Image 1 (tube, rainbow, N blue to C red):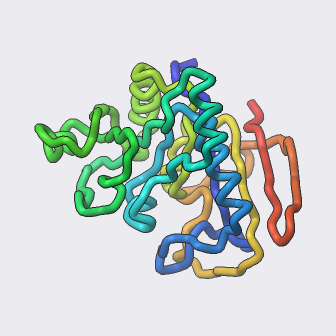
Image 2 (image 1 turned 135 degrees about the horizontal axis):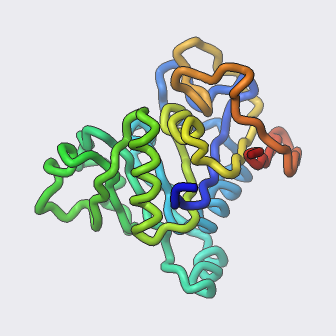
Length: 226
């Protein structure tokens, strides 16, 4: 098996399986409990991976704010915040986004061409040269690059194209899905796994580890079956 981090996808979705509306606005349908759950999963990771579209929609990264979670990380010998890794082939990101003012470690995963846009600048502490397109071999290389940089546990927070690319190379181990009580609809609205899709006979299979209803939401925890 190619060296890579242990990878956990963490997403909230509507009851009809959308992670944002048809305008791809920043999703705001998760409850305070879901936000706390997301922060807990982020705090458990060494690094957090998200695509450029996800960053553009929200403008910020998910920081660990809870003092107890920060204390747990420090007790485990981890820094206060996990590394926030932005995946973008073009690396064409607006430097005015609030993301670049957050007190977090920021890395960029991009192509050699994309890296030239940020050379000699201070916004990213580290630039990883992998590839972020849909070709399977390139995503194998990208995960290997992340692992070589010291990330053992990676949390993936979207979007659907990124998650689809990782599923396509068998690069995901666990999946947390929060089902929220809202219907978004729309053929253009993104789902947890977008891309070309999988034929039924080769589609990734999941084992349900936990299904926990809480108030109006359901928290689902799956393991990828191999």
